[in-house]
Length: 205
Image 1 (cartoon, rainbow, N blue to C red):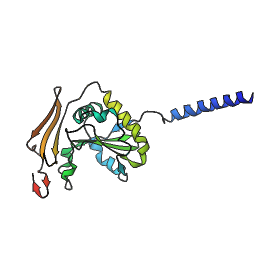
Image 2: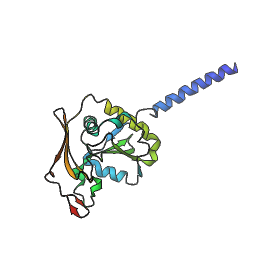
Image 3: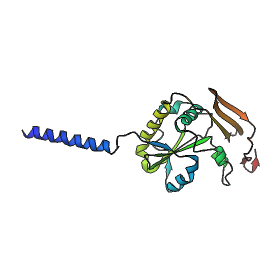
Image 4: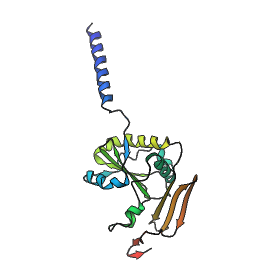
């Protein structure tokens, strides 16, 4: 009799605990919201004390094997325009050539966790570069798996049009990177109008 009562008690306890845990959203998929271009300053002020790290975000998922150009089109489809692109950085007084990127997406996960996705190799690689808050390292693998699923679930690609400058010694060139009319564009170009010259070692390139 005692054993039956104990089993019944444990069953009811586990049922209540499980219901409470799901009610709190512990097992819910992370909610990933993009930071719009106009909200960059608010994001930076809110998370200015965060220690950024890639730890927890480099466990392999399917998107790590997809060309970055395709991922850019998938990000455009799922989240819209990037939080910022190269043109938002190149005119900053403290800009350094090593900071050349094609695009950055900034996110707030579950309304409290900051994350960034950027591309430092333009169209020349697979996957993305990630940054998250060090205090949430344990949560980052699940966040990345959720992001991977969101991007792979996109049934079609969205058009985009970016610029990229490669600071690598064997390139040092401007590129137009785009997805237009169902085709990817990866074209070396002259410096786009409106961009200042990028200085390397006190020499203009």
